Image 1 (cartoon, rainbow, N blue to C red):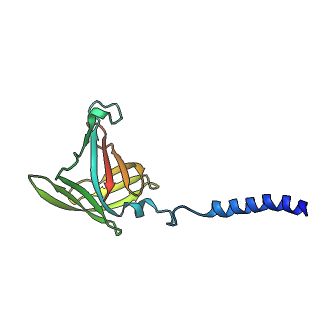
Image 2: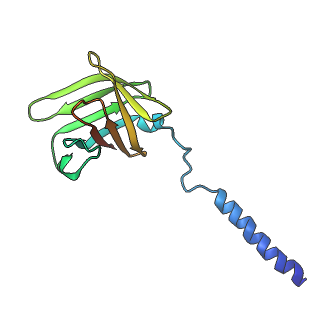
Image 3: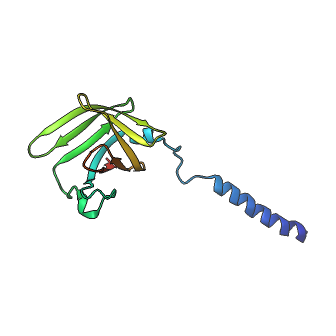
Length: 149
């Protein structure tokens, strides 16, 4: 009888471990970058590579101050359309755009009518945070950090 109990306990522990390991903390399926992109994102920081060293130095990063009434948002719809909204003391402007995730999910391509298409490299993306890099400016790279509303 002892033999079965000694063998049974490790088998039960192994079985329990397998069942628990197969459970996920988040029951949501893994979202694609395109699915994560849908919604409204607020710009929280921007930077321009003034010294052309290829990184966003702390002195080059501009952060939206807490309590600011300025609004800089980008809304991405599931059908590939969207809106950019820029609101400050001088103006409140919305601009239509189209967008796509391209290059094996590595780039966010944005097109505003009458302007060249911009390809932003996605440096980091979660369901709530997004960091983009743009290398098309001849004066140096630009970075944008966004937070989902």
